[in-house]
Image (cartoon, rainbow, N blue to C red; front, side):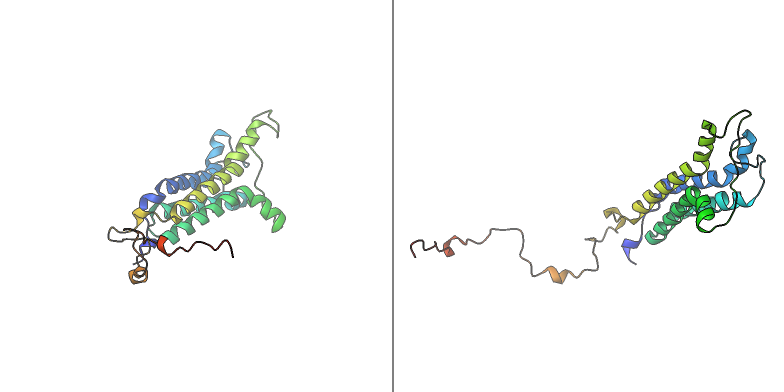
Length: 200
């Protein structure tokens, strides 16, 4: 078995847990936010519509799945792939509506921010709802996913079994036998040096 492909489970535990929580928040907040009149229209709890499916449930599920895999895997390649899946889900949180509308040219409404009575569309509450449910959430997920990919892709000395002498256990030791030892006295070469002929 190749030891370089194995990682300890604790390597992705924190990032995996954060991604699980962020995925749950992104997928469920639009459904429970209307309890306190927070989120996007329609202002009804647990109401399913295409906007909540495409912009909350699907990316939230991708982030949740990526976080679960990162938290439990011991395979380096699987962990990095899960981090990429979570990062893509985070990117969809932030860019999904514009991508669907402009690139794919489909009209799937995300809704409008739920406002207090008398509040305008440019209020601070509107900004907070947008950041916490879409753009800010997406940026945070991409950041944590990138950290997870970096942590899971690095090879630390502690990842190798105790009997391994080097990072490259399969490299034949005979190929290094021809190199001189670094210990001992250097040979005296001063007697072989001939002064330059300055007068010629």
